Image 1 (cartoon, one colour):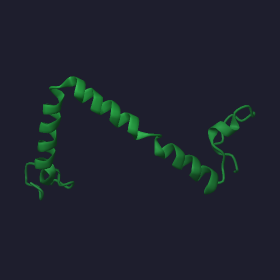
Image 2: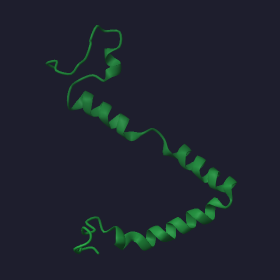
Image 3: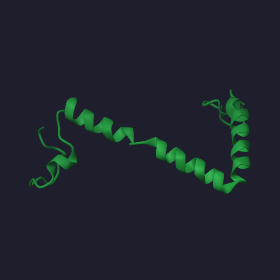
Length: 88
């Protein structure tokens, strides 16, 4: 299956090799879901611990430190239609 056959493409991402660990994890999720209060509690705690979405900070930092452009928020109140195509 990982090499492919005449009737399907190869499994380039080796999903089949990971299927057993996926199946075990899915069984655990299905079992946990039976106690909905506990399941929702785990989900809520997971979201609360996630913190700030890091790509927002990373993109802002790239804009300021590498690309030397301001974020969209820095243009508020200024008379700029768009920064696309401007010589920055």
